[in-house]
Amino acid sequence: MAAQLIDEDPELAHQHALAASRRAGRVAVVRESVAITAYAMGDFALALRELRTYRRISGSDDQIALIVDSERGMGRPDRALEEARSVDRAALPTATRVALAIAMSGARLDRGETELALGELEIPELNPDLAFDWSPALFSARAAVLEDLGRAEEAAFWQERADVAAAALGHGDDEELIVEDAYDDFAEEPVGIEIDEADHADADIDSAEPDAEPDSAEPRSTEAEESEQPEESEQPEDAEQPEDAERAE
Image (cartoon, rainbow, N blue to C red; front, side, top):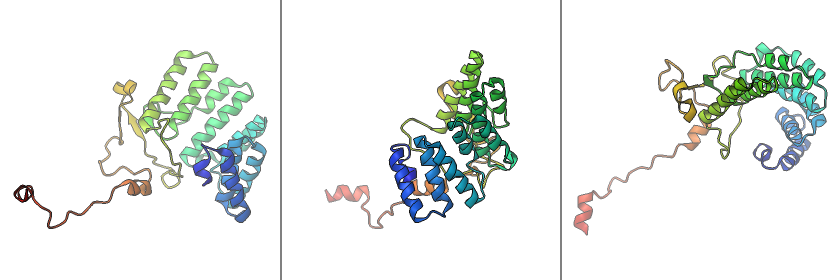
């Protein structure tokens, strides 16, 4: 319930998460929900406390980017960078690693280190010709730093790339997105969408990786696709043929 409400009503989502924590406070995902909803409300102290509890219970660093951002929210960019350096980034899922790079770049900006902020975003996933789930945020972050550096032309290029990537992925303003841990099992080979350079202004893209067979692409959410597929209706064996129908009339 909290996940469904967080964008529409963060406070109500937080109340649902707190209620769940009173019943199941030792369940990692419950503490994670409290942390995320607290962060959405701007309660960074509570978010940090719950994120650390979640990490202790789960043994996972998959919310490290939110920890870094919460430290930033507390006005502690130095602590944010220390937290970021405390984990093995190479061991993180790709989406988490990208989110961490964006958070670290923000911490550098908080310290007035704009060039270093740009450097934090120089990661292998920064590919303007491929659109992954993390690409719009990564491209936009780079555009913002370039704007701060006075490099307007480059900033415009990366913001355009962000818009094209979002369109290619179908991230419309009215679209409801379901966020799942899609990269836990596919961290080495996440599936991206190739952006057609010739038609990028119209956001026309070629989906499927080069050399991939049509049926070989991994679905983003098997359960979602199965649920969306309508059931085939069986045709009755004695259905009237068109000629019979005319004679009947």
